[in-house]
Amino acid sequence: MEESHLNVWYDEFSLNIGDNIPQKINDGLKNSKIGIIILSPTFFEKNYWTQYEFETIKVKNRLDEQILLPLWYDISEEDVKKFHEPLLNILARKITSSKDNIEKIALEISELLNHSTNKTNPQNADKEAAWDLYVELLTRITTQPLPKEHGDEQTALDSVFALFALTRDVLKKHGRDAGEFSKIAIVVLNQVIRPFTAKWHKESIASAFENKEKCNEFRDELERLQHLLVLYTRMLSDMAGVEDLTKLEEF
Image 1 (tube, rainbow, N blue to C red):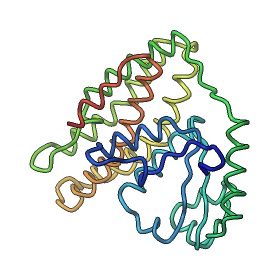
Image 2: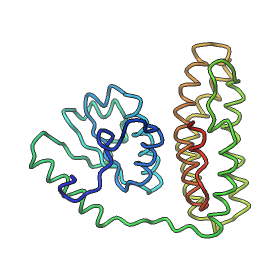
Image 3: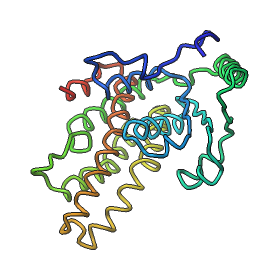
Image 4: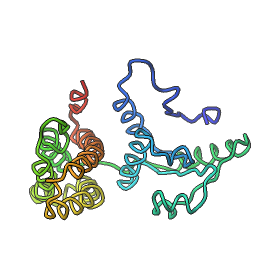
């Protein structure tokens, strides 16, 4: 792909000793117009970082900020269906170890980049709305780790729930002029946060947080959600035109 003059971010040659892995992955994803997911038997083993990258690219794709390009390697349609059925709706390419095959895909990606444009053009109302929600997200449990030795699962769930009311208040305050902000906020609420809250609201009613295994399951899923919310927070800082302070939490 580099021979086709494509600027590629790939961990094996983009990461150096001493790098902060989450920060570097986020930087790579943030600055990429196309997110390539190579679906293979190894990928389906659900390595933590490959899953994190996949979930992040999914969010950016939903927000029209990144093109999701799945490549299939040594897998079947049934394998993809078991992993994440909606991927079957995205036109994919099958790859082999053939150089001709790889060069053809690289040419397709190059043409795709030439036709893609950045649709985001935030107005003042977008920037103000993004700032209001950015400050809220930066200081809430929703983006802060929940330590294993203490912390309250129900309080954490309530904090995630509160994002619905907070977002509605920001949308009402800044009105219809905050179109770019609205597009991002509504997608994140409905497609990222709502599935989590819907599941755990039902579980909490059934006294799940009195069960240690359920509490551990909640914490694992909350951690995955938090990774996406940190990315969301960084998108808001970009839109607001302010410094990204989430990186300070990584040390």
